[in-house]
Image (tube, rainbow, N blue to C red; front, side):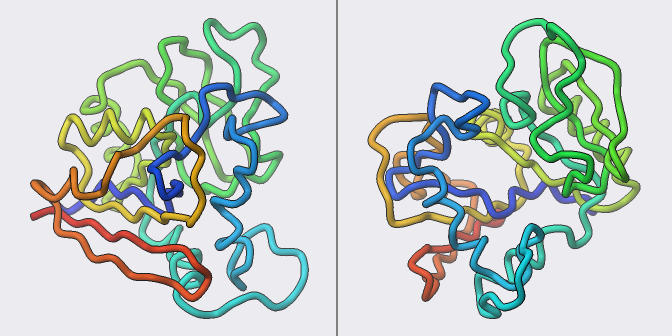
Length: 214
């Protein structure tokens, strides 16, 4: 396969939790203390929202910097796009990211409640109802030969893993526990029947888990 489906910089706790059940406008991840999952990325020199100079230049920075490389489209679940559930009450909500979303590619939002596509800066959001395989087919076409990033959240990544469509995963495990929430895995060993795994600890305290197909 020339066009990989890649999970990149996906963040979970040491007990495998990547989000809470009760997402809201105030709590995009639905977790108290969710910032502990992504503080490693915010400390890097290449963090796109960095406003002051400095930041780390080591392993963590490599993964932050690599995020957009050779990505031609993104797939995400509706819960990553916003906290609303059910039919759209209005179309004013245009994502968490303001007028300059970080994707800069077509983004396919999986939802049972479609709405018209719209463009912000150089990112166009499409709202699609379909199986993981049919949505991936559309995203690959839009990516024009480049790879497709599977952005999450947890439920969406699990759907694509269960459909055996994921080619590579990079999961960042932070040394925190949440106890309950949406769980990517009980143990990364669950994926070893299909994937090779390399585990790389970082000086920041997180551990990078790199999976690629057997």
